Image (cartoon, rainbow, N blue to C red; front, side, top):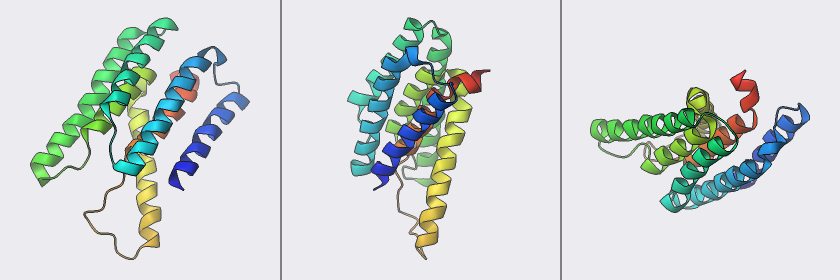
Amino acid sequence: MLFAALVVAFALALLIADRFAIFEWRLAGATFVLGIGMLILSWIDLDRFLLPDWLTLPLIAFGLIQAWWYGASISESIIGAIVGYALLAGLHYFWKLRIGREGIGLGDAKLFAAGGAWVGMYNIPLTLLLGSGLGLMLVLVSGLRRAERPSTSYIPFGPLLSLAIWSVWCFKPVFSS
């Protein structure tokens, strides 16, 4: 059910961006690659709590390639990938040292590196804010349905981060101006 909602959210983001002439149709091929990658990763993360390297790492490469191919700043994409990975990997290691268990996986860090490669370094904060905000809303809604939520329950962050990356990619012209 959550996956179906995610597919609908992806489609709505694209339709809204197209409706307001925000989306650049010259980027349709790249957008298709990103969208399919995000949906497949979301599906796997929802099912297994895993974001496999064989999908996240090529998305980093494709993000850098699309930046070069379409004339965007390759240095912004490289820095975006590095900063994206460093932020979530740093959070992973901090949480593991401080609490003693994983709070966020390194697959999420690699996914965020891919997101940074696609949306660039200047859109990293917005992407993380959007993904985290979606996560907070999910926790609040699911917390309202359950009287007690065990502190050991996990919520996959990959689908939320994927939706944030996708949305920022589709609306990038708005955020960049």
